[in-house]
Image (cartoon, rainbow, N blue to C red; front, side):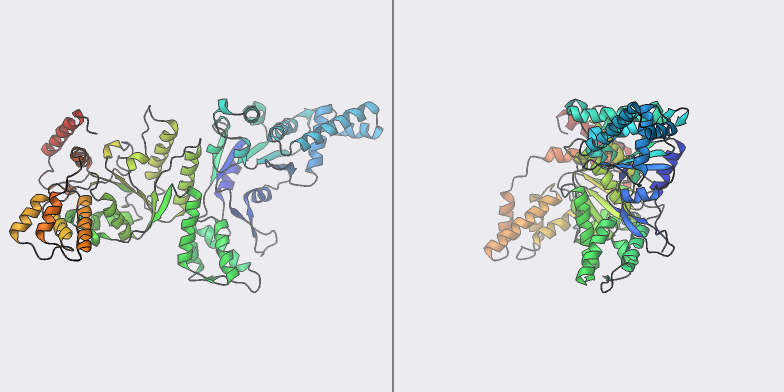
Length: 609
């Protein structure tokens, strides 16, 4: 099978080779494995962590590769490069070119020996002091770049160019308000700011690659410099996962094998969302135990991995068990969902919907109905609970992880309940983090690359609080569905559903009229609550109930004082609806819409929102 390609390598190569930038943040799926082909033709190749992969790919004769990690030394990847750099340092410091320096070293002139020994010690001392001290390390790396582009006697002190890789750059250049940072942290930010902004560095041939999961984790004074560009590594796609599975099976030691419930392609498809490292752990466990790797265990591992990446308080997997035939009433709505909405949500072509907004008063049944829609679609359902974080910069990181996850999944339904509280606005009075989050979510909803693959279902009782940018056509504004309290035949279906489990005998016309009169303007949630209470009473009595007992229970009920709030929410759902066919049959004209707006104004004058 053909080895996977890595577009991010070509992108970063174009940036550095063209001189477009000399400082790049490499972010995204950095904690994963990447394929290195064997130099010998026909070898199986190997998968390596990112830095080892980069140093192998960039092992070029005219480059000196330097790698720095916060807990380690400044290391040169090729033997001999340390000596080259040390000689260049001495030439730069002493002003003696390489030939003069060699001659005077052989002559052992006291003065020259003293100077060269001093700069020898200076270089080695700085390199030792850089171990475990990122401030010293960054300053030393900056000095190495100054040395690299210097000339003595009209000749460069170093014939090669430096390519510096800084691992875990977010730990070296921590995020936070500069005024709240320690002196040491501020010093590191200052060093890198001066380094990357230096015209000599920007116009030179040396380059720095900062490796971090997200540029948002690197101090914004560095990450937002116009000369610092961000290159993202996406999560592995199906082709990359299929190659990895094939490679894993080929390289198994004798006596161990991977047993699959189906084909390698089926495993690659089912593991959408996993990193290759997580996929390796899954396959190693099954191979070690010589057990069959089942689709159910794979799906469980995918869910576990995505939750570990995003956090259980941010996302959960939902597996609705009920379908549309379990939904009482809503006859016209169910016909619309079955004939119009579900086919368009299931499609991956040009007719695919990016999503829909579902609005209506609290207790109307929005979540229950659209959980049934999700079950009908038989898609992966992710419930987005809270993507905001209290930690500085973490909200941006969570969003980037979410996007990488969604891009890796072949088809996914994003279910957002109480969407008006999840997404804010983009106006002047909104916090910058919230503006960025809302703006990025909006951009993702209308991204043509995700159309037909990522479907958004936004539930809210307060549709007017959703950003107008989210409600526009091309996003969920393509379809705004109102969920209204049942009327007519739908209401009678609910009343029958309430009575069926507990009533001892079929009510006559008079009793039915009394029951209808006792229940006026009730919501779906109220019908469900009443049914539950009647069933509880029937169980305690160990028999079915008489009609008189049911009326007595209804007479004891006092509805909550939320009528005006629910009416306001209903009116907002009506005026925001984007389909006449979903409005009440006798209220589809402009006169009805004008009346709704007048009533809304009256309720708002009373302080109802």
